[in-house]
Amino acid sequence: MKTAADLFDPEPEVWGLRGDPWVWQAMRDHLGDTYLPPTLGEVERMLYAAFNRLVGVDLASEMDPSVYRPEFAHGGLSSGHVHMETWRAALIPLLIDRADNLL
Image 1: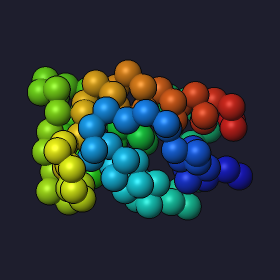
Image 2: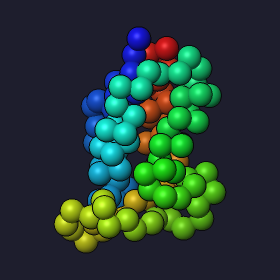
Image 3: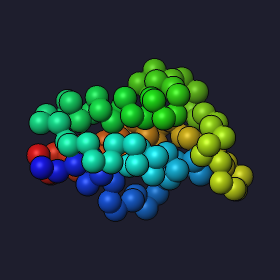
């Protein structure tokens, strides 16, 4: 069986803000050896739940373009800032697409 960690390699080439790669790594670590659910809908719910838990906001309803989280601050101008639209429009869909290829 494939695990959620299989979805996170390789990393995307483009990020929204400097906190995004750290969220990506945190999600990969958090989901780790979790087996992929059997449907894309369940994969999507798993990914949104992990993001919401780790970043502390509901990705589906957060209206701010970005949120700041000190745990994802590792230097640079936008350090610690997580770009909501990049996660909604690019990163979560990328992970779901990868899951679709694995299921």
